[in-house]
Amino acid sequence: MSSTIALILIGVAVLFILGIKFLSSPKTARQGNLVAAAGMTIGLIILCNREGANIWLHGHNYLLIAIGILVGLVIGAFGAYSVKMTAMPQMVALFNGLGGGAAALVASLEFLKGAQPTQIAGIEVPVLHDPSAAITIPMLFATLIGSLSFSGSTIAYLKLEGKFEKPHTFPGQNILNGLIGLVILGLCGWLTFNATGHNAVIAFLVMFSLALFFGIAMVMPIGGADMPVVISLLNSFTGLAVAADGFAINNTAMIVAGTLVGSSGTLLTLLMCKAMNRPVTNVLFGAFGSGSAAQAAVAGVVGTVKPIQADEVALLLAYAQRVVVVPGYGMAVAQAQHSVRELTEELGKRGVEVQFAIHPVAGRMPGHMNVLLAEANVPYDQLIEMEQINPSMDRVDVCLVIGANDVVNPAAREEKTSPIYGMPIIEADRCKMTIVMKRSMAAGFAGIENHLFYKDNTRMLFGDAKASLNALVAAVKAS
Image (cartoon, rainbow, N blue to C red; front, side, top):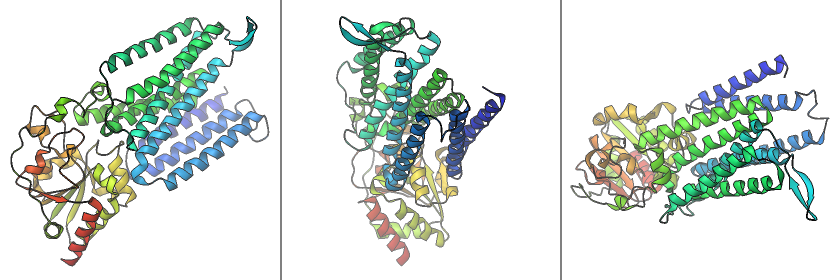
């Protein structure tokens, strides 16, 4: 590799790093995507020209690359413009799975490309011819992690679509998954030192198939509301698979990009688990939301539910000085983000200070609430993280909880036997008045009663979130 190409690839790495940095804020996320895309474009051009070849004129492989780029651009653009923002978690899971599958296929083809057809007992079979261990290890790793990410992300997509949101478990499931994992690792170990002959091809295909099944078995026991953590973890798997591909085919850009995605995805996974006060192992193996502990219902609940009408809520909001909105998955399901923005604009015209309290795991993907509110053109400076807004919640006149449940449940502080005890929450119960918008009294993902609903300063506004918000907008305008 020439020094010029090496310098250009360092620049590509810098663009990738800046892209991820910009993605950390809704204000700069769009620029982050463009910067990272520019880095990928430069890296692809360098890859195609590092041997002096012209991407447009030489070799059918380059034509296939160009065709692949065009097809990907069309599919990506169609998805971006046609998928509703409420379905964005599904799209993220699906695209991440495709990335993992692509990484697994690259590694598989690289591993099997040395296989030559040989006659054995009159039958033509593929036989591998001793690739070096230095190449075999990253190829096997990329195949394993990439195929696991592909199948696991597919199940995550189906869960987010509501096909089977609740955990699916059976006795001894974790033991079975552990045995499958050991078999996969055993096959990888054997292939590392015995990657020759027809048996190596069979062992590789068995390992590939088991890795696909393991991804399914790993995600099936996980409840739909844990999908933000799962998506982040599978995203990190895809990044690691891409980095391993980079080692296998000696591509620096892939190594850098994959390592960045893998490390950032891992850190985000750990941060979200911290936000729920649960270890990663509990998310992956605990089948949270289905056990007997999650069925414990009303322990520690004191008080009665007090309904309220939309016109009463409108008066409270119109004459408040400070209002905090806590969005949750119910807002996404009702597609009520635009109605929320319209309500906050009406309140702003009256001089009411409005802020949005964002919990790290509200919704079904990392940053789900930020994405929905940004799509509705809610000003970025109104979106306040949980740690920043909690200290001042006792100075809030009205807290409007829209479709959130477990992330505002005071049982996390008050009830030591609760399955969510110790989880950091948005402390809506400390506000002067809290209005909870829900369709019914149904429990959240944890399967427990929400102590907030029974507080003296809480009122319940029942109904579809979008319809209720539209009624509030009309009532505020009329007040």
